[in-house]
Image (cartoon, rainbow, N blue to C red; front, side, top):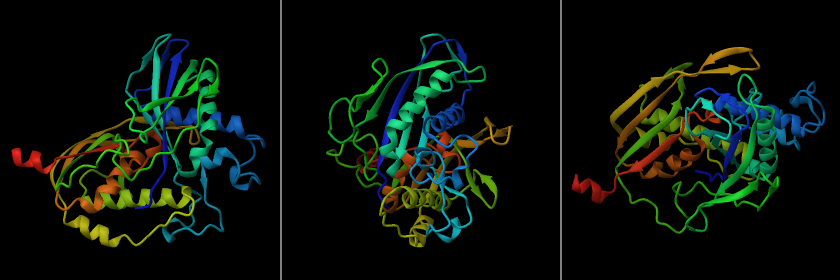
Length: 336
């Protein structure tokens, strides 16, 4: 798998007035962020469509928020004709809390991928602007208190380091991109998990896998691997400079056929989001829960680790499709 550099930012907003927000905040945050980012960086005005703007290749807005596919771009056959590619960011809201009183904290993680990492100052400023302009139906104001970034490189005790101080309104340091080719949550100098033939995949947020134009919950491991590979390779193609991508991944799908799902505890959850472009409420259902895999999992270790960062399925930018993989070591299996 190609390596995907990423930067995980943790935003801490403070409510300035009592606010009611939706339980599932990913869509709210993404929409407010997009509007604030465009107002912040666009010099052509709201009437100028991005696809025909002469500044589109240099502008931070399409580089972060709309991955435009240019006619001359060399893209895989299955992406030809599409106006946009995958966007290089993911929102990860923390909880389903709805009421925020004055002084309460609203926290969420925001992940930038690939070349979008260098644009993190624009993202931070856009979040500060969206907070001041207000969130929720009544546009209740928040204040950006601070931003921290996750540093897994140094093996230090506190992996979260201050990046932006809201009091002084300045950036404290330059963050270092992290790499997805090691387990998340582990410093670079720690060993990876021991090989195992048994693994639990936890689907922590609503996961939407679509096949033949239908959302599915009864899927095979091969189907899941296919969606994971497509997401990782497409992100690398559009957002990693000089990425070496092998689009021939059929052997990995064949290997996935040999992995069995021995336990499956998934349930469907529905939530609604407001589409500003379509001016309507949209149902965004998906499954959560866990499943246990057994078989030769070594070929999929790197892919699973990457998807712990970038998520899987549709609506990843909202926070959908967040997974966490827990491995049962050979020693634990022998005790069982």
